[in-house]
Length: 603
Image 1 (cartoon, helix red, strand yellow):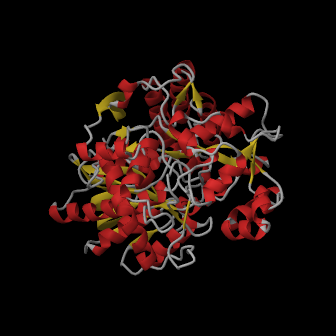
Image 2: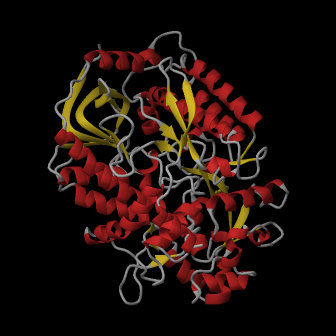
C-alpha cells in the first residue's frame, strides 16, 4: 500500500471558495477542529470570477424590495422546480449575510448617502445586487480569507480529494493527494462539507477554470449520495468569443446591468423580437426607454437584455444560426452607446466595470468605452448538484454536507444572476453550522485501511505500463461531444449518442496512461479527473433525456414547450450496486399556502 500522511479533524471542508470558507468559519466558531482543503492555492477559488454582485433584498436603492419579492423572483426564474424552502431561507437570510460580510471588512460601492449600492440584474424585479465594481467575488474571497485566517482553521493547499471514506453508512473522511509531490493524505473527520463548485470543464466552451471538473458531485455520487437536476446547465449569454485563446471567458452581466445592449450584425437590437408574455409588462418598447427605465424612477421596468440567462442565450444562438452574428461567431454587446445619455461614458464605464475594461483592452485590444464587444454563450454554472436537506445542507449520506454550486435546490431550472454569491454565504454558513453540530453529537469514526488501499491502487493505475490512451485527448473528446450533443439546444437522438459516447470514453479512460514520475505530473492529474468528468456528463445527459420538455436552462428542440406535469418532480440520479446509474423522479413537496400566496401576490 502507498504511504500516506493522516490528519484528524472534527469537520473537513473540501473547497475554499465562498461556500467553503463561510462553512469553515462557521464550523470553527462552533468550537470544533476544522480542516480546509483546496485544490488550488488559497485565494484562487472560482468565486473570484463572480463579478456582478450578490443578490439580497436590502432595499437601499428601491424601497419596494423585500424578501418576498426576492423569493418570488427566484422561484419564477427557477420555473418553480426549486426547493421552495431553500428559496425562502435564502431570500430571508441574504441581507444579514451581506451586512455580516460588510462588518468583516468588505468594501462595497456606495449610494450618495453612504449605504451599500445595488444594481439591476437579469430576472430581478428591483436593483438588488450589492457590488464592488465588477470585482465582487474577489472582494468576497478577500474578506472571508482575512476573517477566516484568525479562526484557527488548518488549510491544506494544492491538495485534490479523490475519494470519500465511509464507516458503514456514515462518512468518515477523505483520501487526497498533493498535486505537487503526489503524496497521499488521509483526512479523518466526523463530518465532511463539500464546496467544490461546478462542472464547466465537461464542456468545450466554458467560463470555468481548470479546477471545475465536477469533483464534489462525483465524490458524493460514488459515496452513495443522490444528484438532482443535473439536466439544468446554465449557459451564460455573454462570454468572450475572440481571440480564440480566451473564448468562453466571462463577460459579466453587470455590463448589461449598467446599460449594455445586444445587437446583431445589422445593428438591430434583437432582444425586443422575443420577449416572453410573462415579462412584457416589465419591458420598455425601444432602446431609449429601455435605458431610461433601467436607471430612472421606474426601476421595476427591464430592458430585454436583462431577461433570464437561458432566454438571452437562446436568442443569441438564434441570431448566430440565422446568419446575423458577428464576424467571430457571436453578437455585439455595446456599452459605449451610453455616451448618448451620459456624455462622459468613459469615466462611468471605467469606474463601474474596471475589470471588463482591462480584460478587453489587454486580451482583445478593444476599448469598450468606444466600441462594442463580441460575445456568445459560454458554459457557466450547473443548477444541479448534491441533493441536500434545506435546513441543514446534509446529503442523503449521514455526515456529508454540501453547499454552493455543488449542492442543489435553490435555483431550480435556472439561476438568477447574483443569487450565486448570496447562496454561498447563506448555505455555506448553514452547512458549517450543522456539520459542527453533527460532529459534536456523533461519536468517533473509524477509517478503513482497506478502502484507502483500494483507492490508492486505483489512483496509481495510470503509471502501469501498456496504458496507451492520452488523458488530454479523452478530456478534449468529451468536451467536444458534450458541447455538440448536450449543449444549449438538445434533441433526444443526440443525447442518446452522448450517453453511448460517455461509455466509450470511459473504456478509453481505463487505459489512460501518465508516463513519468508521480511528482509534478499534470498528465496524471488529468487522468484522475476523467472519472469525475465522465460521471457528471452521464448524469447531465441521462437527466436531460428523462425531462421531455423545455424548462429554464434545458431547451429541447424535440419538446419545445413546458409540460405542466413535469413541474411536479425533480430528476434524481444515483449509483446502483452494480455501478450503473439510475434515473428516478422525486415528487416536489407541496409548497406552503403562505408562500404560494406570496408568489400570486407578486405576479
